[in-house]
Length: 111
Image (cartoon, rainbow, N blue to C red; front, side, top):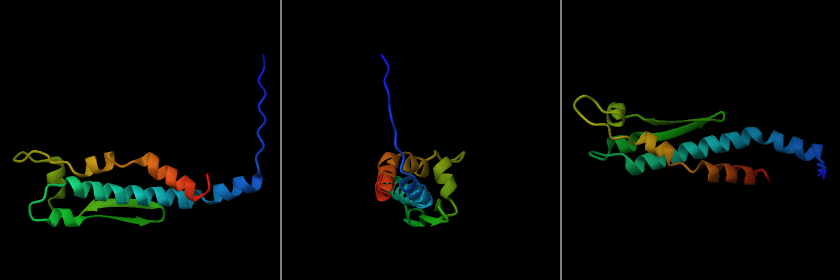
């Protein structure tokens, strides 16, 4: 028994989709960064609110970065010899729903 499969590729559709890949990548990066920052803010320990308010993200050229600008941000995330770690950035990243974000990105380009 043989199974025969025929696939027809419309070059115009393929080129249109490929042309939208950069904007799709930028969308995924931006949305992932926004969700990471939001999730980090939900779990960061709040004493004065300075660390919480310093968590932000920016997107440029399809790349995104999430930052916590308080000078002690790393100490809270990683801990010190005097203080246990209270991670917020790693859990913020780990709780991003990448499947949903990618699904939305592909829906935006018609896939």
